[in-house]
Image (tube, rainbow over all chains, first blue to last red; front, side, top):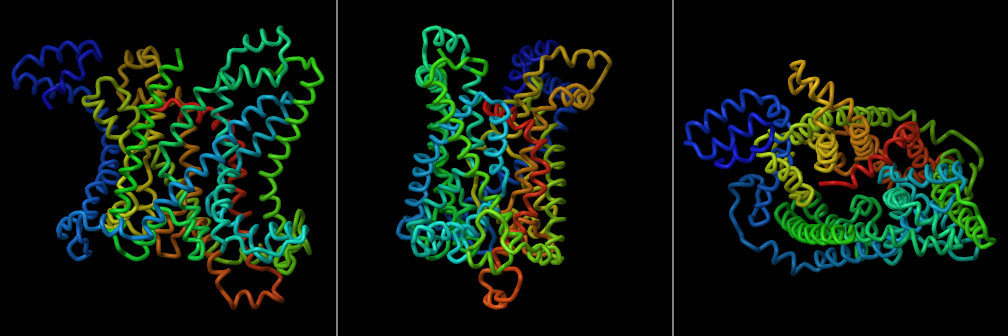
Length: 331
Length: 293
């Protein structure tokens, strides 16, 4: 509280002067200043209040509730009154082969999505950039952006229909080349390709927007002088476009690595089944089953806390790296 | 690059090959939609046998007749509209003034409030404490719970705050001279100047509301309150598990596949109607979002 008036110093002229003085003067005057400030500026606090209350009630209160990760939670006793058990739930988790498997699957699915999914929007953006026919380009863009706006349930519905053993189009296709129908969604080895493939189908087009924007920002005089030198479009793409958008590529890559713990678990919940758990079950689906379906709230909350802490560390690391990269690569 | 002449044969070849590849990618993006639409208009028997590839086989609207005659379909469709419209309006009512307050230099503890909002982008308590909290607040199984519990998100707030901060103070001075208070300045100066940013967050809200399914599935048990996406999921799950349904299908003109496809088509139509309007903004929006923090 003590540095509050000082923190607003250097804002609007009149307020700023009072504030610098107030910092050196006794309590009473600071109080007078505060009352005066709220009398004049109460409106912005009225505007701020609903949002802050919302954050406290819906995002910070659950953080307080996270303590059940260290408690033997019972609905009867409630969050605060339930007895403490220390690290017991974490010990249980790390001795639980299902949880270990879920952690592994989270990292593997994330890493595979990154390896196969990350280059696609970059390639798409580079290709869109080479299309000279404006209408053709706009039409194609409109279509490839569309799946981003489609709900996960619909994506799952399409996947389930398309990969169905009797009716699905995929089995019809492979039937044409003489392969027996496969019930893909019950095969553990097929889960990840299907999941990652549908992810690319849904997001690659839309993710290319950020790279297209980077390409649009490339200095046109670079291309002009390259044309004078007789460079081909292929050469210009490799020698000008790609190096110019490299900072964007690196930053997007770092952000993606920072979000490694985030796997699209909603789609997994819709597509997986006990037969494919061994390759499909990730931390969030584990939490969903243990917590919301089996009612082991404390254990599931512990798994969630583990996930959140790892994610936090990764995101923070990624943020600080990306700040360093973007600063150095700008100059 | 647009107006450059194509000098060499290699360039021309490159551009053509590129057009073909993009065309193929576009078609493969489009194909699942065409396939689903074709299935939805095919007979259950043809769909079951896997005979639908590109266009409907034994054209029929039986699947639509079944879907549209289901009262629960219309009910959940209506609920989706309630959640989308109610949720988006609630978001805007909280976010616009909140982001404006955060952008004001005279706000005491401004850094603290900003950090409080931004922190939630990096750390989240997780599914279970969030769910317990909703339960303890008595918001399980309520329209209000779904609408209010997802009203804000840090990304949208920061996006809008950044936009407000980028507006030069000279714009508001005239209004201040006329004795406008903060609400009037926000409403008459900042909101009109921020149309692209507000349109962008509106778009984000509408899309996430329309598509939202996980929390609706988890928080709502009353069949009467579920949105379309949850209904779609239930239909897929129950129809495929329902032995009786499958056995009656031998002579039924529809099947699990065609009914599922018909619901999918019905649920995509509003997105397609909204899409052209949205398209104008999402390019801008992504770029606004790109400069976060």
